[in-house]
Image 1 (spheres, rainbow, N blue to C red):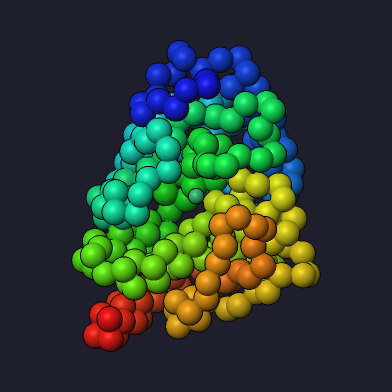
Image 2: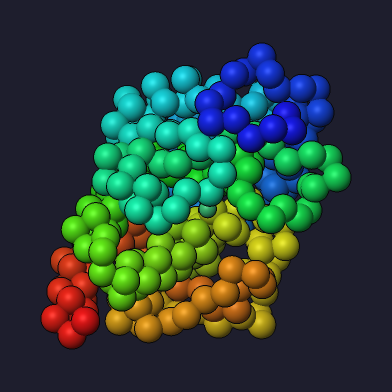
Length: 245
Ligand SMILES: [Fe+2]
């Protein structure tokens, strides 16, 4: 599939699309072995993703609906923040349905469905993760015209949903989609040269990030329940920000 459609027409996928999905799926499952959160692996089973089949959004949506009431909202390209947060607050995650070409296996300028679907979507079947994610959307919509708040919530999104790590039985594992969908990020995140901080909202809100390099700092949570339990603190931090901005 070379165009960027705004809805999935399953019969339009080409043999190359299936091949690319399979190459990336097999390669990442191998890279992630022992390095990805068990919650993610469990979620992957729930959504029934396989190497030999590009996920069908209708089926994915009905599975997610059953588990958490969430669903995918298909978009041709990455969404702007207002649309993205608005859909989050409606339990919808924006996802592309096109896949990179064979020449683009290792580098892509914008997220395709391997990132949006393979890496982001499984955890949308996890209730605590979804409840946290929805709170982020709700809070963003409440302050959508406040630049400072949206910037901080962008950091929260980046250091959790996109590049978050989690302690499981004292081992550090990845759950962020930016790590899960990229072999380079997987190796980078688990190496010794990067900084790891325990998740704390004050620190997240004051930590900047770049989107054009391998990450050099990550935040580590204990569980998705911990993230969800931090929501009142996040609201408090946002309210303080509103007072001074
Ligand atoms: Fe992403």
